[in-house]
Image (cartoon, rainbow, N blue to C red; front, side, top):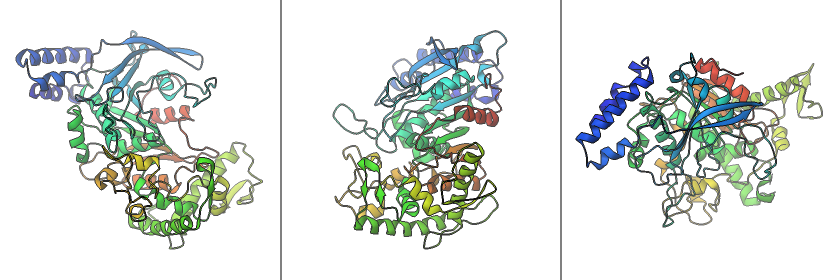
Length: 508
């Protein structure tokens, strides 16, 4: 192990100006020496498996905007020494062939786009460049997926799989409960950092991307770089001896801050008693009382955060849910409506929108909430019957589901157990933003649709504000008419990536 560690230290960014072809030779020499002098050492042989093979690729292509993009495809790379699910603990790595042409832009300086395909905190396999998934309609053509567009734009792509809440081994034991998914994404990032000098792309400029639960994990990855909380889990799976910090985060509709999301949901949707989830229904009297209690609890949570607007104003909530935090959340909706109207959307029939000379001056926030409707009954995330996806996320090796908040545990309809609060913490980006001995990403792009009811708009606003309060550069918007989904504005996404990474994209 010591020889490989020294090799890694020798080939860090201080020698980045040396072409990677030469460094590849150094790595091979070191590896051969390591095996010659240490035959029989199981640990060292396992370490050798973490070294990227630059020659193990096939040539593939994808069509984007009528143009064929050819690329090297390094697929099904297991990124840990001790995988318990190789199909999930592996990554696909793609490099545009244009970088192997004469006088090309140096491939070692190209940012790495890191999309994950995680949804519902389910297990995910690495993404393959192609068309967006149609979710049931095989004939639908939704255009190229983010990986394909990234290659078209000239980026290197590394797409990691990860274990999820339903992952099991052969005897039925759960192997993907929290914090497995974030541990796997961190391990994939460590693999890229560890092999940076022999892999194409620049591991100091990794940009993660995800939607929904994948958006939450993208945010968590960016918030918690190198935090020691995850170290025992990374050691257990045999992650590479390197850092797991990333450069930037793209997060669509992140289902994050789970242990506080029930309160945020009722702060926003309290008073709207009809819901649409699973065929729909109406809150009963007990659920209405529960909604009232959770709304009241949100007041203390928000005020304790001591968040500040960009101008330094302290954000607070009053006992009835009003206050300048509500005004702040409302301002993003107003901006969304104004942008939509400026682009030709006619919203003049909405009486809850006040207009003056084509400008939105105010809205009735309660009527806006009724307009988008409530999706989930209460509690929305830590259900009293423990039947949500999030209850499943916080199960154990032998328990399919658990509560993860004190409130739902105390009011449980099934006498369910309470999850280990350390595991709950490790799934929430809010606990790591600006924390000591943690490298939080500098650049963030967060999108939450104005018609998204999967979590309250308060959740991304809190995330964005916390990031800004520690000095992060955040691009946040609430696209009008957009529901729960992601990758719907890929040209804008990659323009943002080019801007923050200072990368001269080949196609725009």
